[in-house]
Amino acid sequence: MWDCWSSCGEEAGGGSRSFTEALREKYSSDNYPYCCPAVSAPWPVPDSPHREWLIVPPILGLSGCGVAWAGQQVGIKEFCNHVTELDISHNILNDWHEVSSIVRHIPQLDFLNLSGNPFGQSPITSVNFPQMLRRLVLNNTDADWTTVRTLLHSLPRLEELFLCFNNYKEVPLHPTLAYSSSSASSSSTSSSSSSSNPTHSQSTLDSFHSWQSSVPSGSQSGGTQSLDTKHSKHTDGAGLEFQCTAALEHAGAQSVNISDPNTSSPVHSDLLQNEHLVSDVSVQDPNTAICSFVNIKLLHITYNHLAAWDEICHLGLLFPCLERLVLANNPLQGISGYKEKLAKTFPRLQYLNLQNTALGEWSDIERLTALPALTDLRLLGIPLLKAHSATERRKLSIARLPCVRSLNGSWIFPEEREDAERFFLRHYMDTDPALLPPRYFELLAHYGQLQQLADIDLRPQEHAEVSVRCDDKVSSCFVRLNQTVTELRRELRTVCTLPSGALRLFHVVREDNMIWHPEEMRVGTRQLHSFGIRDGDEILVQRKGK
Image 1 (cartoon, rainbow, N blue to C red):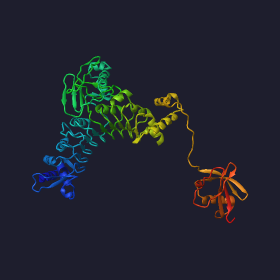
Image 2: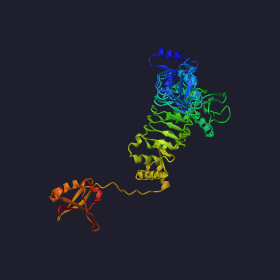
Image 3: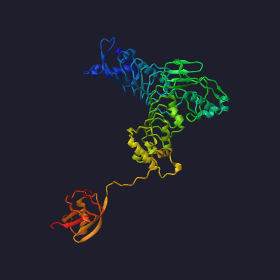
Image 4: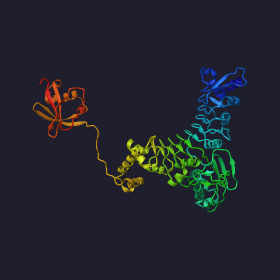
């Protein structure tokens, strides 16, 4: 059997190999002579005259091994049956069928990393992935949204999805939905009912809103369900497939009854909110399906090209049960839309990462207060905060976000929140009332009118005006307190006309017409501030030997 696998690798050439070849080369028992069975599991080669053994751990890593295809299926099934995590990133896999041939024989697979494989626009019709898969990493694969949807439909338990470095500029809800950017050209050929009625899209979305408000927030479903008022069907998958088959009349859309065909109970999901979230959406086909994948709890979509907030709202519609969303390093320009609609788009979002985005207005941050479950927020590296000091950034942000309990990874304690809110009130105290943020009036009602704090400078004094007494001669001069005694002697030799080595210096404290016992300044390397010299003190200079 191993001979058959080796011949496949030789025919491919160019350093590429099958998954089974890479598995044998890396996890051969020859490479692990002292392997502990409690850590990794040995598996004999079936039907092999040599009875080779592989030490295959449950967390299997074959990153950068030149894997291009699956290889013999029986080998994968025998050796990887116990594997729970598989990393085959940065290989040369470009066919989804080959990936499916690998992972379908790993029934306990919980984590799959496919990052860095050149899938590009590789066609995908159907895949056979293990049903236990909960975490999928597709970073830097250029997988388009059609591919992502197909994968999600085959993964009913998927909870964490990573889509970084995929050059996404938009998040299409459905291929047959027309967006405002392309609606101008398509509106001329659309039906007369939609073109003559400007409230057509709004009425359709309002009907979804009226349904959503009647659905309990806690109900959800774990599969893909095609919801239709006439033709309900159930298929295995990872989302809720909503089919709107109610006839769209000239005056608008009729209400749509959406429920779970198995239980006849309403299914929770957040669909299109209104025209403020999805601009000029027109449903061209009454049987159009809008997919919503309710099992996804975590989405990493960093280092893409998402600049419009409408596209971020589409993520909320596709994944209505998101709890953690990482949008760092996207050129996001602002956060728009009404707070009520924002709350319905992300009803369960607890963690939001907006680091290194292009947010430039405090109003963008204030709109985040509409998210009902948000408690953890990351805002480092946005242009809005660059004009403020580190202390001001944190305090001004905390004061605007009353429900956030953790900011930039640091817990917000009640004492810090109160201090930040009081700082916020004083910061805007002298601002034009027409320009005051709404949060100012909320805090003003809570704390009342505050007074400005006294400006106390606790920095160490750098200079002091002292009297220099040498014999009967007294002169006033400024001395630097960060210099040493030796440096002061050099400065005073011009005043006393004596060499610096012949001078003895004494620090005399004068306070309330009283003279304290003089302290001789003996150590030449000691700095003056350590003597506690203040304005009005006296430096007594004597010649050595007196």
